[in-house]
Length: 249
Length: 231
Image 1 (cartoon, rainbow over the protein chains, first blue to last red):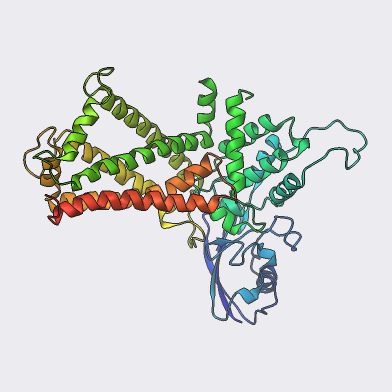
Image 2: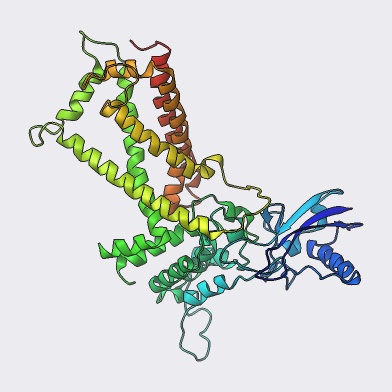
């Protein structure tokens, strides 16, 4: 199939940037979206142009490195699918695809479609961990976890930290990401000692990074490649309320 | 108190204040709408039920409270909560506005609704409406329908809504209120942490019910008067 791509090109953080249109021919429906871009880049390199910079790593939908907003939707049209797992059969001959970087003040563009998502790392560093004394690992079954809690913690921990929730949110809010990270530790016994202080620090960092405020549009849940539920946002709301009202923080 | 202030300092705390004040407003608009439906009762021995109701609102609590005191307690509480509600909305809106300085060229809404996307503009419309409504039917300072008379609720309403553009403004404002309530009721539960797959469909249903109930009831009054169905 032949496609028309309107791609955001930006030489660097200070460059103003703009859209450049590329025609790609003979795209195979079984190619992944990133392979299609690889082919375009090979062509650009042969033509002596600067290849299009975009983020990618594992290309199997688990690392959270790929991004891109395709025709207004992060990770493209398929539900619970990252851009790297999106295949070109999602499109038909003659389609125009507008490709934009994830947009947020907290996600400054590095080059072209690559954005700096360190803001999410700083939120994690603020409290998305458990502190344990070093030593031999404990025997697996010495800390009982109920089936229900284990399942919910797994659902929350499925977050790969790609930032699609933030990119899709009309408010550029990071609530789903922070909610997933707070919830998965709050649901497990290992997360209990720092439970109150964790949510406090992570929410403070979230606000400090310049993310917007959630208005429950639920766009995040719809585009999340891992299908993280907004029920975790409700849980985050409970957690921060409990933390603040208990006076721990 | 310090703990509540600490909570309010976070973006989530502001939303919690919006949710709690929002639920108070939901209760208010339902009771207010039900009370106003008394306009549809015909006069009994020359006395209108809605006038009796208006008098009741002024004398309720007597003799513990003096005439009008309870009414003023309600008014001050509601206005105070409205200021908190609006202030929180403005602060969080400014946060969100600055959070995406460069907009997308293409936006494809996947899950958001007309109601969720009109919360802010709807809030402004409702705020303007509330100010107009108080000057119109509480104080009578803006009364295009003729001469306002304090206490004559029935006559004031009939005169007021016989003016087509007043009725039109009320109807438009109520449609915005309906959208605001639909997203607001559902959203407030989410903000207060009441979210569970077991009863989330029930939350949607309740939001629909409240929005339609309040909008339909409130629109029926001015429209019926304009069409000459109320005597």
